[in-house]
Image (cartoon, rainbow, N blue to C red; front, side, top):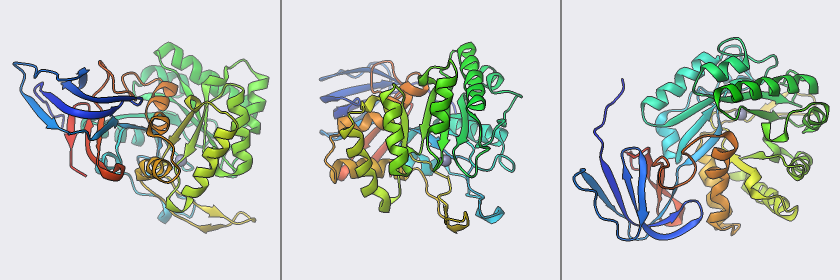
Length: 377
Ligand SMILES: [Zn+2]
């Protein structure tokens, strides 16, 4: 059921705004779904009914853009009982995520892109901004319409394609196959007016197949966005080299016990002078976190929601001392720019009014998705 809302305005008084760059204490006027004005001492926009939210210097940031979420649940590596349940709308919003990109994981057989698309549309009806990648771990890709390019052209919610490389659960795609997928995604993206990114799950084997694909073909490095590159020191070193050649990459926010290792990953990225504009971070929410022993047997199994994403930012700020204005682009502006999602990732006039109000210790107090307030966390 679609809910219709009369246009109304919200006037945030005295927000300490990070857009994500710091803008100081300003008022932010939201009209309908968009940010209409920003500045000091804004007047109420007569005759629109206006809700005034007095923030008294509380921090306001753009809503998070989480580019890797198993919306309908991932997993299944330990049989049907290990399929991860779907993520609820409430879980996602409570995690501060206002734009979410859904995908399929290891299981592209009992999970389908059709099911994923339906989940994306359900979230949209409730006010979240949701998209998906076509494909799954597998190659040739599972698609909605028969090909990756057709999916991109014909399905507005499809932003790109997903595939897994260098993983024992992947189809072991060759560089040529990776190139074919990227060519399809690039062409479909062009025809649809999208970026058509190929989002690559990178396994323990690392980025070798991707480097080989880059050398073999004529696809620009900006077409690829590999993820999970903080899974080991070796893979992270390759990602640093990838960025040196102009590529971008995604880090996976770990659960609490992995945060010190994430901090180390950031020191290494910094030490290598990788520009942070090329780096994003996502939650892998709803995905399984299986651990296999040396013989390939499953020894442990777990999964998380999207809350790990904001927890990682909080940790890196409060424990590792990185300034907010450096961290926020990783989860707002950069994913929106790299994936090509218009109106997202930045708190600017004309952009969507996806805003988070933060409390003490950077807890998420209030979430606004396209100008609508959601359940106080
Ligand atoms: Zn995943």
